[in-house]
Length: 182
Image 1 (cartoon, helix red, strand yellow):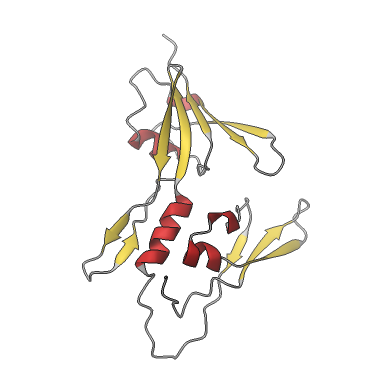
Image 2: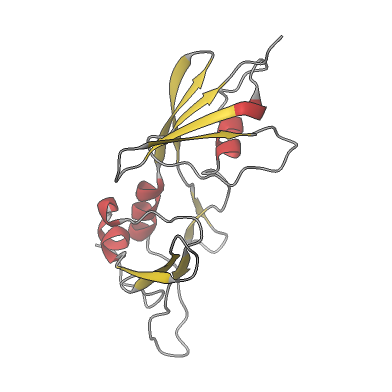
């Protein structure tokens, strides 16, 4: 069973979401305790552009130091963040699994490595699926909205020397990498 940690307080997270007119905020209360403590990823909430997330600090003795997440919580977090996407290069679909890495610190604590593994460009470039003939300036990402079922599509520039697109991958995304015209 996961150790209950003094902070942060995952039972009373609030997401401040702007409405379409950008004049009002909707407040969404979220309890991520089932996600963090039991690995129930179905309780996760997708963030949208413009969301502001408020994670309150749980009350604790002033001199108590936070020791980090337990291994159970880190493992649950890792499992819920794992994404499986389909990458199509030269018409050949392949499944790519993107997940955060659990590492050991020099002090013997476990932590999740901070990196850009969920952004489309680093995920593609680290996948070993992109070929010399791939045209990275016109990569298509297709995503089905889990609520409406409507498919969304973006064309993004994933060339290594250009500013990276701020597009995080979600489970089930389909990435199509076209071939360069000769």
